[in-house]
Structure formats: structure tokens, C-alpha cells
Image 1: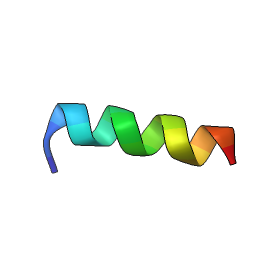
Image 2: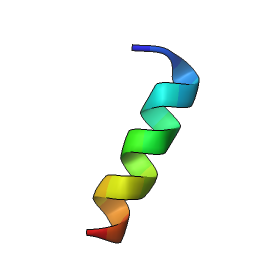
Image 3: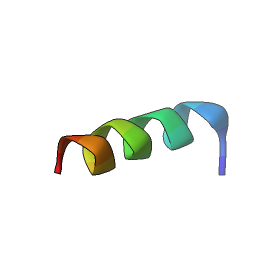
Image 4: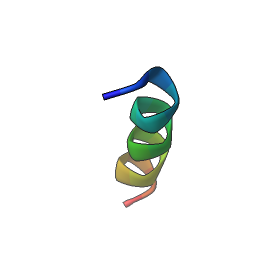
Length: 16
């Protein structure tokens, strides 16, 4: 998993 992907997923997960 790339850094960018991790950030994107983190933001989405955090938003949930």
C-alpha cells in the first residue's frame, strides 16, 4: 500500500 493510498483510506475511514 502506497503512502497516498494510505492517506486517502485514512481520510475516508476517519470521516466515517
